[in-house]
Image (cartoon, rainbow over all chains, first blue to last red; front, side, top):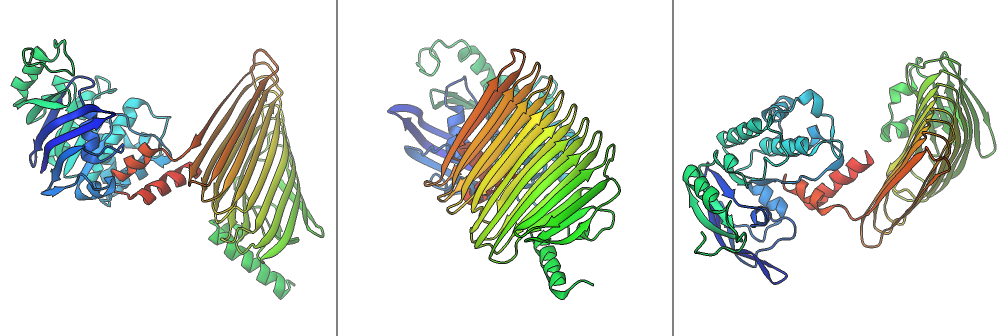
Length: 241
Length: 318
């Protein structure tokens, strides 16, 4: 479904993404696990094509086609979508209308279901604006609901658990699993091994490089043992990792 | 007996009113107070129990006296429809409003100038909101695509003890032409005032907005809010002033101007002043291009860039 091949991004002479290769298979939840500053969000932005990020080198193959030079809209129409780590707030745009932008012609009941799947009561949220009156956690859940409404082929979820309270976290996890069950492949970007447990495979990111890919249990353990204690965050040294 | 020309004018106003988003049926209902004025001619004037509307036609417009009786709670919004249908014309509305103590009313005004090439529309309002009275005023303009119009709404509003004044002025359909909006509110004890202006400037439109709120009574509250979007060569200057002159007065100026074009020019001048140590007034103003992240958020849902900008603009002017 998605094959990122030898991707590089240099900004102001500094290497941010370094010869990164990654594959997300059809129907897979693929976790990207990494500490802060390792380039997780940058990967999300490069695949979605936002923030003016253009790869310095490499390819982003989606459904057999290199999308690296396509606009954000074109990529979205091909079936890629992104739930931002810190979603934008838009005055005057209601939750109902935001979820309807997905283009799936969802009826109101389907829209309501998307909200319920992330633990939000539709009656309380449908007519609210996605503006500063929402808390960070509420806005994040609405972002996830909007991706659910879109039913993309590939959902990129950037730190979907950050800012989510402990009560709502299981709902978010269920929402992601349900999204996957409904047919979306998921690129799950997180710094939490707990979150990565729902993935089919997990890749560990360090200094803009994938340094290990494998099954969740062993990869998460390896991350815990090596990356959590690493003194060289973002500067991988072979003797340490 | 209504003359044919008056009937034709009235029908023309009704049609334009509907095109501008107004509810034509409301203008036909006997349960709804309404006033329809074309140029300097009163085409319809119907009060309901609790509301008295008196008019006097002048050479250039109409003098209107609107009274809401003490304690009257008007169940349906009062509809006002002002306009000039020909390409040229002058309309001066001199309005005197008295919402007596403990009354409640909501007024929806549509101002319609669909063919304006050289039209001036002036409104000069003197408004008194009694103690514990509530007055909601929504004014929506519909202008054509020629931009040949000057709109000059001015109002002085006094809000009595515990009274509420809320107004929203919206000019987002058609070209603005020239807008010179100037509303000034004086709030007594525990009175509340909210002034909201929304405008979308295009072409060579010139927008001037001046909102002033004087919080003169203990515990008075005020909000001066403006949302302006500019494209092409449009220009806007927004002045939001709030004066905290009494204990526990709270005021806020909130201005956002979005510039969607290299030649559009936006200015914001917030003035906040406190003359009582227990009052507090604040302001926030944001001027700039449309937020890229907002645009990309919508593009990541499949909208193209223009559609995304349109959703953002419509949202801010909603």
